[in-house]
Image 1: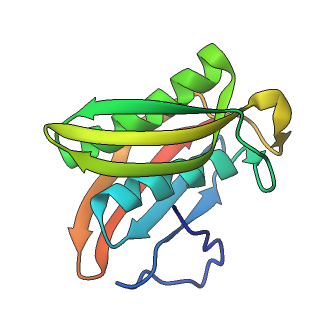
Image 2 (image 1 turned 180 degrees about the horizontal axis):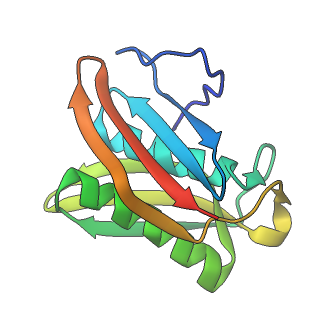
Length: 151
C-alpha cells in the first residue's frame, strides 16, 4: 500500500515513499517517489486522486485489476493515469487504494474502488495527462516520477 507524505518539506529518501502536488493555473503538477517503480506508480495514482477527492475513511465497494503491457517507463506512467481517468469518466470509479506489481511482460495493478458519489469531491476532476515534462525514472533514492494533469 502507498503512504501519504503531503508535507511539501518531505524529501525523497530510499526508505520512504510519498507524493506531493502543486496546483498551477489550469492543472496540477504531481510528483511521487518510492523504492520501486511499481510503488512509485501507485503513489502517482494516489496523488492524482487527492487532487480532486478526499477518500480518507471511504470503504471500497469493489476491486478492479488492470494489466498494462510493458513499455517505456514514461509510457507506463501515462497509460496507468489515463486508465484511471477513463474508469472515472466511464464508470464513476475512484481508487481508494492501489497496489502495483511487476508481472511477466507488464504491470499488474489492483484498485480498491468506490463510486464518485461515495467520496468527498474537493476539486476539479482531471481530464487529461500531459506529456510535457512527464517522467518516471530511477535515481539515487529509488524511483521518482512527475506529471501534469489537466483539469
